[in-house]
Image (tube, rainbow, N blue to C red):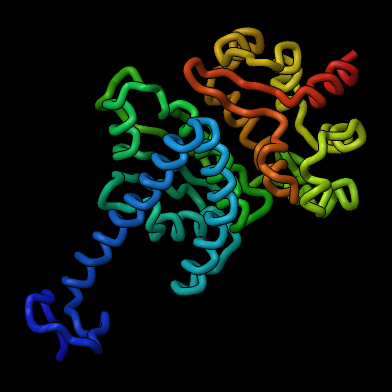
Length: 309
């Protein structure tokens, strides 16, 4: 039995993918892409309903920080993609089931092997969140996507910068969903050159789960602070003045930046935290919704105020 166009016949206990025609396998692959996103969507819904919007965001970031590079590894190995630059990143993202061509209208512009742009002309998730009208697309697109996509890009090259050029909210609902830039830069020009934080922090990072439950120590905060870029420190200083909940609009107004730039700066902060063995509740800055604001760990706020004197 070979080249089946469907499975309408009798049950075959030894059925294999190889039994079906190429056209049928392509159709099946597209449905697997849909199934992949259904699972992700239900995972997010259950987390929000059983815990909170913030918990869902944090768990999504934690999951994708690990899953993104792992998926890239298996895709590149299967397709014999030589990892190392923006071109290899684009190839793998094209084939990623979490970024399926059937549900997203993606446009790739590879200017050269070390520089390119991705434009998402249609995003099914964004359309759904906009219809829902609760504003969930804002923290998802500004917190989850930048930090997780950055880590996936770094699998291909530790000196790659992957940053948003345009993110929601969008005034024109028929306009593009988002746009991203990927480029390789010298290590000295990377806004967060020490992304393998855990290895550099050494014994200051608690590996014991009981230790991870303890508050931040001043020494740990000072060590990590030294690795952050000046731009990220600027955002952190503003939040530290109102750690119980600093509004996003107040931050961008004071610093004279837009929401995309702030997300870019904090994306590297989240990357630093999730590259360590610390638990996600240790993240020094947490995103809250309705209204969109940031809450800072009190130990961090106190030390930042001292360091900023």
